[in-house]
Image (cartoon, rainbow, N blue to C red; front, side, top):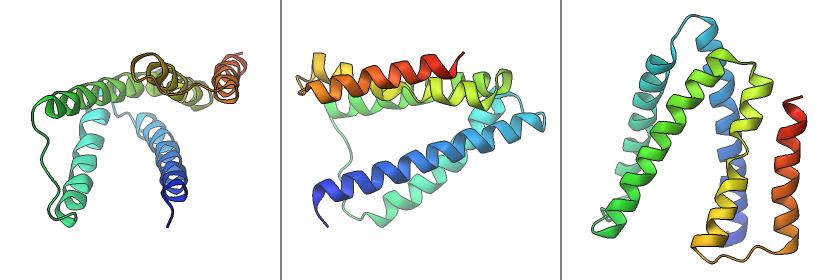
Length: 140
């Protein structure tokens, strides 16, 4: 399997997983689950699945040094995102909340271009603008 194909495949699987996260989170809030318990218990399940995946990948190196700092920062950002998402999905329609939260790739692309010096081609820049425009349209 080529690296590009694998990246696209796993990105599509991630998108489907995130879509299901939004859908099932909204169903949970309709059943009266509050944002913090929603974030907590979905994260517990998340951790269990990741622990199994980690166990399957024998020999995976544990992060150390600066990498550990970045891993911790990613964890904090993910936790914040989950808590804020849980609150938003409780208070708003899925058709409003999910597209806004789904605009994170535009922010990540810009961060990559500014701080990681990743190439932001005209096509990618247009894609970022279309994402932002799409979010604007959905919020109307």
